[in-house]
Image (cartoon, rainbow, N blue to C red; front, side):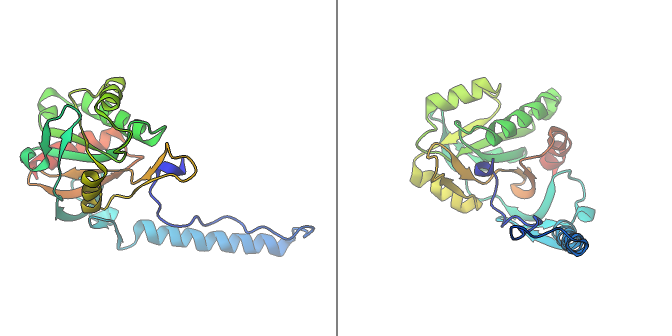
Length: 235
């Protein structure tokens, strides 16, 4: 659904509509082939070009990713993150030095992407050894200050097998808004359906020294997290 993906720009590559009654001729086919070639070249530049800017840094080209399976970005100190979890306990990201930290932004009533991200994180940690699980901390930050209550968060974590495995942080609109701004996260209630929220759908990988060095798009594979966690913790 479009409501859950990052808005990266207008879609491209579709054939413009022809006037009614216009017969498809050979030259139309040639024009379409040329258009697709241009779009393909543009996509190659975006995917394999020197860099692509994100809110927290530039994505490094695939051939220079180094040790990580996720998308490596230029290292940057993780922004401050201090909120209460759904149990009322204060969580400070700075207290997890020495561990790999995975930060994502969710809401409990999300119909698709948030459950998918949570499911993949659950699969990843379930695939780790007990020693590896001790070296990672998963944090989810709410993008819905109205709908994410202690009750709904508790139910969400239970339903997705993440109770005790993921700290889900909530707060007021002002408290959460400051965190969204610091992390470059967009979160906006859908005008057509106020129950839905358009928001950034990424997972941020943070080293044991508190540096954001890798990001995972919503389509990440659990195996990427399993591979990267020991390396993030040691970095």
